[in-house]
Image (tube, rainbow, N blue to C red; front, side):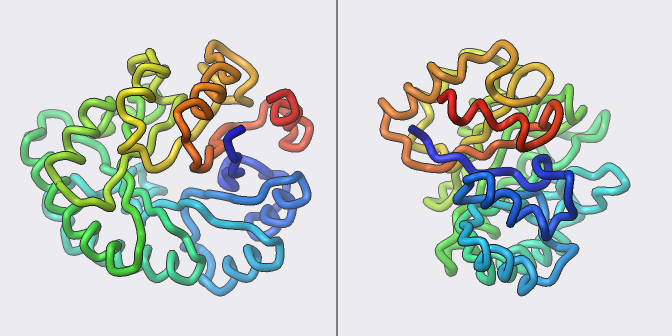
Length: 257
């Protein structure tokens, strides 16, 4: 059975962020992920991981001005210097936390923008990020995201992501496949897993369409979990979902699987 990592940005919101590590451990999780750790010193987050015997499997590089609606800067022309600063900051945190994967969010494509220019910027920035991350044994991830949740997001399909991965040509660049986004954008999850698994660096799950627990909605996760076992996937499954009620109250799905 695949290994589940609690997403502390969406789960255990009943308590402040630094208390969510203990809550996740008490609920039986051995690993966690989250969007960003940057509101806290790396030592604070590392202490929570150590105290609760948790592995941090993933977080995102700095996304630009999140509060103003930015969703990454990796594909934004003119922001290259800021992106490089973010790479350095993310690596600083990752080395302190023992985090093996960093997600570089592509960002939003402005209406009327030159998509080819954004793609070229994305590729150049990813080559830089991968070169820097490789010095620390860190994998860089890119993730296709549906435009219902994030309208205008630059990267939407698995094919687009894997074409970029091939063009970048860095061995430590992988695709972060979120089954929730795949189902909304294109469906056919199982066949995409079969096709792309060697180049998938992390998987996330949530029910579709509400993004609640994975035992709700239209996706047959029992089938997909069996498939991942059959294909030999030994990575983590990030539980990036919004609990429908309380976090702990909704964890019965893990026992069911």
